[in-house]
Length: 91
Picture 1: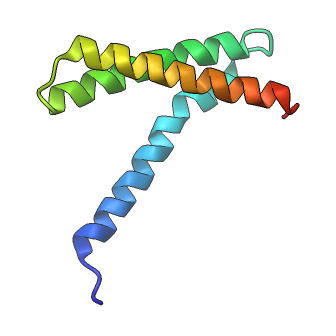
Picture 2: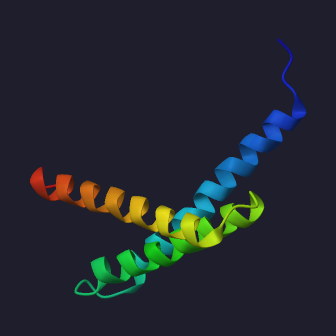
């Protein structure tokens, strides 16, 4: 089967956006002192989730407030569950 050039470009775009999206929390963990790392990271991730919710709603022509709140709640819940499992298994 012959590969389509557009699929290769989309793969590169997706991987680039993944790396770009991981920069804010990675930078907050790197920059802030150890006492502030977790709260600062949660705050920065929350802002990123709100921006993502807003952007996706605008692109999809959907209500922005609903998308932002949904994205924020699900994202923070996911992050909280991941943190709890990390604490539970001492990771």
